[in-house]
Image (cartoon, rainbow, N blue to C red):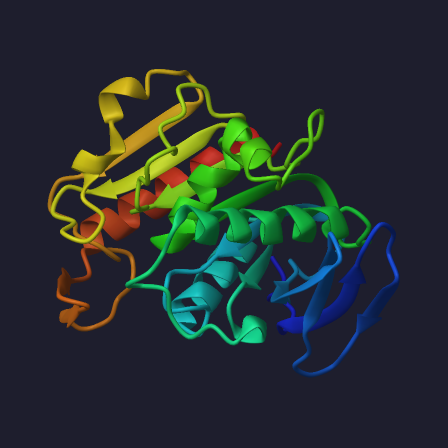
Length: 264
C-alpha cells in the first residue's frame, strides 16, 4: 500500500448551500454557518494515497486535537485502507480544554461537527462509500451522541427525517453521560473500555441495558483511561493514566475488524 499523503487542512463554509470550498497548502480554518450563528472547526485530511476509499472521522479528547496520538491513529487507519480525518472542534473556537466542564452540549456540538464534515466529505473525489467515526474520551462521548438519533433530534442537530450518514462508530473509553443510554443505537457502535478506568468508569455505561445487536462491547481487564496512547504513566486532572500494550493491540485489531465489517 502506498504511504499516506501528508495531512492537509481545508477551508470551507457551510450554510443553506455550499458557499466556498478552498484547498490550502498550510493551516487554515473551517467556518460553518448554521442557523445564522458562525461555528468553527478545522480538519486534517489523511487520504490513502490513490483511488477512492471509505473514510473514518476522528474525534479528539477533552484537551483538544493537539496530541500526536490522533495523527498516529489516522496513519493507522490509512494502513487499513481508509481515508482518515482528524476533526478539531476546539482550536478555531478558542477552546483549550473542557476536561473539567464537558456537558451534553459539548458532545452534541462535536457530533454536529462530524455530521457536517460527513456532508462535505461525500463530494470529495478521494472518498467513496461509507463513513465511520472513532472517538477517544470526550470524542468517544461524541460517538455515543452520534449513535443516538433521539439525542440529536432533541438537540436540534438533526431535523426529523435526517440522518447522520455515519455507518459505524467506535467509542474509546467514553464518558457515558446521562442520555447516552439509548437502547437502540442508529448505527453499529463498538465500545472499547478499560476495567481500571478511574476517569470514565465503565460502571457509568449501563452495560446491562445495551442489549441491542448494534452494540458491540469490549472490556480490557487491565486497562485504564487512554490505554492506547503510549505516553509515560501520568496523573491528569487527578486521574491515573497508563499505557496497556495488550489492550492497545487487541483493541486496534477489534477496531479494524469492526470497520472492515461495517464500512464495506
